[in-house]
Amino acid sequence: MYWYEYCPKNVESKYQLLVFKDNKPFLPLTDYYQDCLGRIDKSSATSNLKCLLPFFKWLEEKSNYQGNRVLWNESEGKIRVAVEDYLQHEMGCKVRDKDSFRFVNLTNKSPTTISRFLSALKSFYMSMIRLKYYPHHNPLIDGQAILHSYKEEVRGVREDKPRMPPVAGTEDPIIHRRLTDSYFKIINEEWQPQIIDDMNLPYQVYQAGKKVNWSQREMIIARMLFETGARASEIIELTVGDYRQRKSHQEVSTFNKGSHGRKIKFLRFSKDTVKRLFHYIDTERKSYDENHLGFEQLLDDAPIFLSANGTAFTYHAWYYHWNRAMKVSELSLNPHKARHWFVTSRLREIYNISMNDAEIQQRKNELIKYMKWKNQDTMNIYEHHFDEAKHREAHENMMEQMAQREQDYTKQRKSSGKPKLAVIETPKIELVDEDLKELLEGLE
Image 1 (spheres, rainbow, N blue to C red):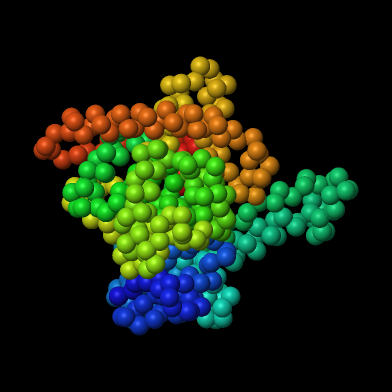
Image 2 (cartoon, rainbow, N blue to C red; image 1 turned 135 degrees about the vertical axis):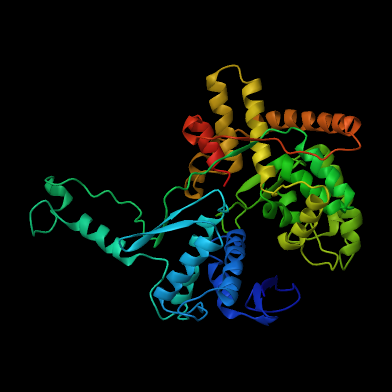
């Protein structure tokens, strides 16, 4: 019932994406996505939209408030009742009252997207209020909690007297912290990292792609996922200029989550993938390009990956090919797990080659900076400390081992048997080394 499409490249429109309901444009979600751009990066805006589409469909088909369906623009009270029902009956959560808000307990039936969904819905209503589409208060915000926290912070030690200024030195300073203003508060959310410990995972994916006849394009993107640790969108949206601006022929510049499209980090991949990439550009891509241009003739802003129609390849179009390959080979694998696999492999390599704790810490810091897990506002402060040469050396070792393992896997692969993904669950995050915990948490 609800779906979306990106605006074709040759069509002029103020919208980069259109959301449809029953094959007709649905402006609330369309304008929400457009309002998000510039506030958050495109991949996050799209992720929010994907979390909201099932909820809007559920509102239309299953919501119930006093015998009637709940519309998205109803009063905040009705929306809260609908969201509570959705959390309980569709997402397997347990919800209980607490003063002016609700506690949300996740269960083993709850998906991992609960927090993202609630955050997306809150931001949706923020946008609707800002755009004057929604005349009520934000139903996902607990106004009473904000008011209570404010009163606590401005109250002085003297009864019925205002707080003294800091210079007086008679009162404890206010600790400015982010107020928890959500109406639905998740109280048992504990991120459980998955350590992908199957060294043959990339080659299982490549074989899955061969089964469904992936083109050069899909195979290159898959290889870059495992070799770089990047998000899929950071690879799919690369331009020719992103490759040209790096001095190494094995690297490209790309954006990062939260960088608002700015190319602030680089990705490094194997020599074999470089050969495959240039072969793709000069053959398959050239046939799709309306001017049939080769690499040297392409402008810097030309997308590296093209659709069969000659337009820029999109995540949505790519995921269709990925998902089909995984289903045919019976692999339950989210593409983001390639990022987990990369970090697990790099950490293993760090511990294998380091001679002492100081070397381990140094290489961890290099990996942190390569992955760009730190706040983007502070990156300029320590960016020059990142020794790219050391990362290249360690990364080159990893690429050589991957190439050897791929050859071994191809030779030894059995003709039958369902491939299995070896996953080690870490039951208690408290037991993980603090530095390792920081690395793993940065993945999400």
